[in-house]
Image (cartoon, rainbow over all chains, first blue to last red; front, top):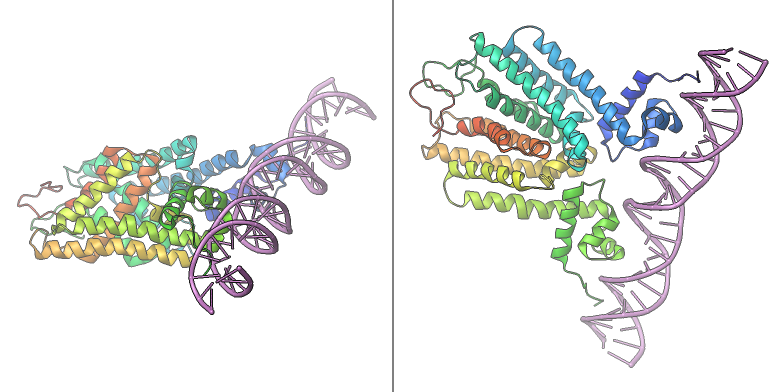
Length: 205
Length: 205
DNA sequence: ACGATTTTGGAGCGAACGCTACAAAATATC
DNA sequence: GATATTTTGTAGCGTTCGCTCCAAAATCGT
């Protein structure tokens, strides 16, 4: 019963993600959204309710296709330390290749909209917590596998890694410089290495 | 010659800073600004040129009164390691006490407006570089004073500290939790401590 | 085929946006 | 005190904002 939708819902959401991602929430207009989603304004409101509701949907899509996909891909190889290292390496590579400096939609939202919208704030905090949990899982696995120091504080270091990740994504938007971003990440990744006998401080494998 | 200004220029700029700081660039309207600055719309355009030009002025004011003041205050005591530690401690304390989660105007701008405005982007990058330079100066001083490991990479670690600082300010806006923020900072600050004889990884003074 | 239901395009709502025009008010110079 | 110059308040410019209304179009169950 009823006329069925003529537009590609997946493509539409992807278009919305691109809009919010590159322009930010406030600077994105409903007309911009509709155009990039390939639908009319009435369809947008009929299918998604409005700008804010669409943003929540787009955020979920981004988290699923970009964040969770990346976590699953790196965690799939069964090498905990390499999973974390490769995760950071990929973020740095993508940040350097990101010519229009869109950054990460989650990080952008954490500063843009989360502080002014408690509900979205909790959603964003939940997504970031998933990243931290990924770090913690792999620290614990790496410790068990003897790849990482036995006395490594999994909860604490996972929080540190999350913070460093956020820092990389912030700095990448104003200074996308490889040496800078790698310098930010290196001491954090060095924490995962086994200690060496002599008192070398920043041992590198 | 000519009528002289009736409003307090310092108070006006501070009002503009508060507006941009708490609402962000896009979400701040010229009428909001004029009201919080205690002036009329015509005076705003006459004295500051427009919204964007006023933002640049407000950003400079913020950098001077908030960032450089803090750097000077902590660097003034002549204790390099303590300067860095106290700097981070103050950021964490202020982030936890920041009930409306305004965060740092520089960090907010780095994600909000810098990527969409090359000129402002360079300005923001310059301010962030001042913070990194503060870290590097104090690492070098701490090394010379024998407070910090002799082989500490001042340039690299200063970049790391800047990244961690950015991460703290991002996470504070979605999860202002003391344990989280201190966990983010601790491994970075531990880099500044002298190595200990036994293979303890996260030695704490 | 028909009625019920949903989607679609277009027009347009009231409000807010950044900004400007303009004349009155206030000062310095002469 | 007359004149030139600057600031101030008010009004309003044209545009865009998020959103809604409505009739035509398209599909279902019967």
